[in-house]
Length: 343
Image (cartoon, rainbow, N blue to C red; front, top):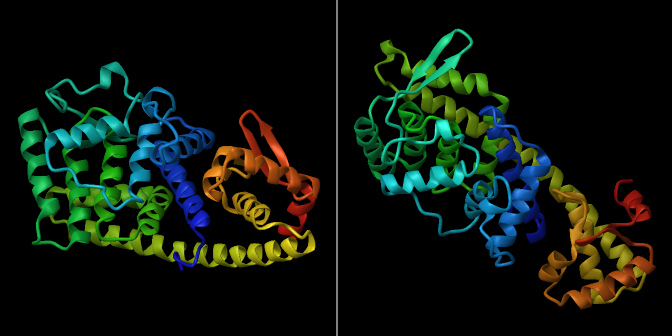
C-alpha cells in the first residue's frame, strides 16, 4: 500500500508524520510548540538533506536538528549508537536550544546529581543515582540493543524501557528516549509504522506511562514481559490506523490522477506544464502546506526555475494555478480547480 503511493505523496506523508511526531513529543514533555514551527523545521530539514541549505539548522530553525534526525530515518544509513558519546550527541541534537542552563548535564556526559519525576501525587520515578552508575547501565543498554539473544523488535522495546528508567539527564529524557525508540524500531519495521507510533503513544499516554510504572513496581522485580506486550499493542494499533489512512490516501491519489488527466486533455497542456500542475495539485491535497515553492517545483520537475516560471504563467493564464506568496515565490491551485478537486 505504501509503495502504491507516488514518490511525491510518500515524501509529503513522511513530512506530515515527522511534524506530528515533533509536536506530540513536545506536548508530552511540556515543551510549547506550534504546528507552524514543526512544519518549518521539517521542510528545512528536508532541504538540508537534499543539499539545498548549508547553514546549521540549530542556529536558524527551532527544532531543526530534531527534525533532521527523524528525516534521516527515511535513509538507509542511519546507525545505532555504539558509545556513550553517541548517546550524548543524539541528546544534544534532540534538545538543541530547548534546555535551560539549570537543567544542562553537569557531569562528564550526563547528570551528576539526582533527578525525580514528580506527578500530581508525589514522586513517580527516581532516576539512577551517580554518573558512574548511569554510565554502567547505559553501556549495558547499548549491549542489549545489539545482542542477537533478543529479536530486534523486542530489544528495541527493552532498550526504550531501560533508557527511561535510567533517566540520564535532568531534562529531555522523554524526547531523547522516544527518538531512540524510533531509531531502534527502524532497524526492523518500515518507516511509516515507526512514524505512526508517536501519535498512538500520545493519544494513549496514560496507558504508556502505566506500562512503565507497572514494570518498575518492586513486586515485579524488573519483569518486562507486560511492558513489551503493551508496547506491541501500541505498534499493532499504529499499523491498523496506518492501513486505514493509506487506503484513504490511495483513493484520493487515484481521483487526483484521473482529474489531472482530464485537465491535461481539456486545456491541451504541454508535458512539462502537465507535470508541474500535477506537483501543485498533489501538494495541495497531501502536503503539510497547500502551496509549493518555486525552488521545490524546479527540483521535483528537474528543470530550471526560469522554466518553471514560464509554465506556471501558462497554468495561471488557463485558470489552473495561482500565486500564493511572492517572497518566496510559491504556487497553489486556483479556486476553481480547488472546487473540482474537493467536489
